[in-house]
View 1: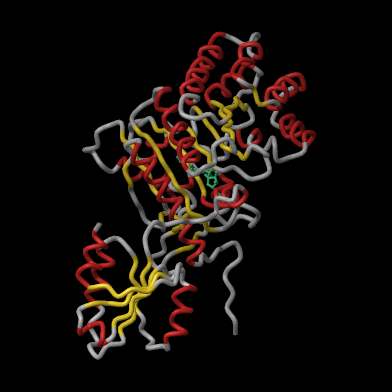
View 2 (view 1 turned 180 degrees about the vertical axis):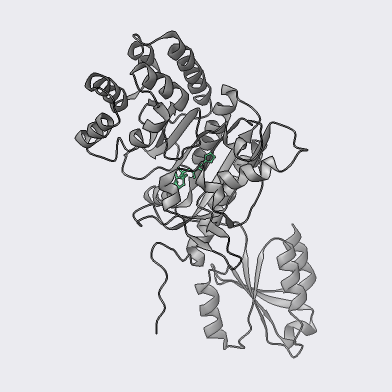
Length: 424
Ligand code: HAM
């Protein structure tokens, strides 16, 4: 019986994995350069962690089961609740804290382009600051990461503020604005008439629905914002100023387009302030990344509210974008040596292997005792740069035979000199 890989899951072979590891490394290096430090947490958490704050959509997508001790557990569908659990269980932390993590997460979604049931998610979060400067830094970090991958100009960031949306919805006569977010989150995903119908059922009158829809419809540039909000009250204008200030700061991090987009409210229910998502400029793919401010999630664990803002980037849409831009490739600057010991001393090649590896390069040993022709073919197929042959004749003069597989040039060189050259 042939056992197939599960639907929505991926295998990664080395050619693909090298590129994947390379872009994750770049993301890490950028986060580290902003002062963020890496954390990690279990792949399995108590189901309760997601019940109150992640939102019903995510809850329905969890890979969950009852363990042998009768506990309801789940493969983590996102990193934010675990990160908050870790943060609130330490008393000695000095704020602001900047953390990043790169877990695998699992969601039972219908597989489609850019969406799988398992993906790698790069998370970065800042805790202990409620300032707009913190909001801007986090969005700026997200943009710097995308730019560092060569994606500059290929994405735009849509930004909104849930708190501002609450004020707007209240002004439009909505009594429980927070309950509207799951409906608004579907604005771009459902037919407009369906959308209006859903609002009507929730008790919003037709006039307010039209005002809301006209707000949600357009992505707005910073210069148009005041015009649009002319008729709204002072509290809304104050909050709008914070959003505008954030926007201006973020534009110092990146040349990529930033939009006010009032239809971005995000599906997860813990967000309380700024929310943002990045999309490819062509608008063809699912979200590249998403995040926002979530100042109340800490209250799930402790009595205090710890201001928090962060985002997560999945690996799947990044892969699609890099492939489209012909950036799905990996060039390492290490040299690859294929080392063959045909001498009567079975350990004659080990020191050479060790020294090549210590020098930061790659040394692969022939272990199949193959004929020269077939092992050369193998070495070339493995993209080796050099072939080293150690025979009794070479050993008697403390040397090796070194063949450049790119030029086919072959030289005899003393072992000492070869090792000295490696260290240069
Ligand atoms: P999220 O929007 O649910 O946010 O996911 C963040 C990113 O993960 C998405 O933009 C997308 O790139 C990727 N992603 C989500 N689901 C899938 C999937 N099924 N397959 C492939 N990629 C996927 C969160 O998870 C929040 N916890 C982010 C956050 C961190 N907010 C604050 N801090």
